[in-house]
Image 1 (cartoon, helix red, strand yellow):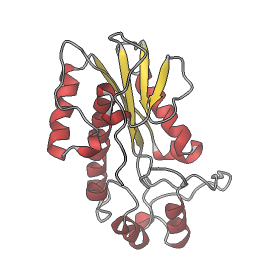
Image 2: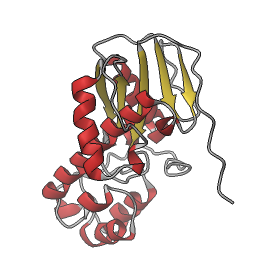
Image 3: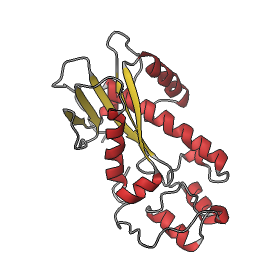
Length: 228
């Protein structure tokens, strides 16, 4: 039985300095987790905002350009793979969200975050389950974050050919896992994620140009669990 749609979101804040925040890239084995924060301009509405995953690539790119042009403010926040390895993916995502909001040229009065929890930060905020399909500012943030990260994966494919990164965007698909077993892990892979750990132990590094991990750096065993 299909799930009933969630009701329209009613925000307790009614002003114009509302920031929406979303992330992309918790589940991939390579690259940064990328977040975006967007404050939309009520006087310059953007038609067609929706969850970035439900849009075609062509439509996402068109909306991306419109958001950059019409939003009151927008910002990208990120945590690189080595930060994810050090912090764990959850803490890295929270930090990337804080970096995104901190980078806004306009200080928000209220922040809505996609999901079921917010970072511990200084801005009044609340989480919104399925917010990328219920709140326009979060939809805009999801589009900015996804287009940004997808383009980074395309650039990494040119840097590390053979992994298929432009197609699967770094997620642990059969194509990606097979390429890892055949080519080894690159310097951009998340060494704390179990499939990458296993490849480093059995195959090594891509083209043997990556230094081994320092022995004193320990990873939590649950870093690859419960992520989307």
